[in-house]
Image 1 (spheres, rainbow, N blue to C red):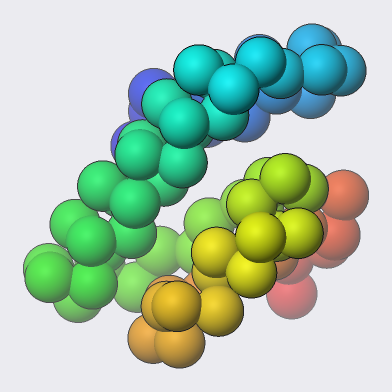
Image 2 (image 1 turned 90 degrees about the vertical axis):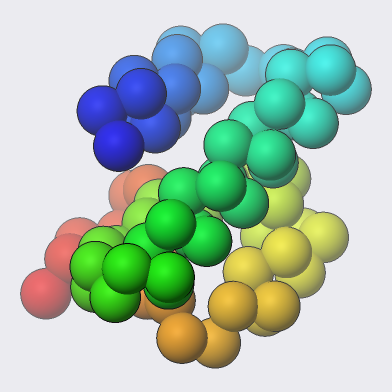
Length: 73
């Protein structure tokens, strides 16, 4: 999960991502979400704008997400 958060920081720094980077981030997100769901870890994940636009997160109703600039309550 630490790798996930480091990638989020990297994304914030970089404004534009190429398609290879987007695919890599999508796959990392998918792996983390599946691990979370399979092990009932109850983690909350940051949403990435480009994946949100693709409705990627709608496929995982049992996982919690929030936008990066959104406060966690």
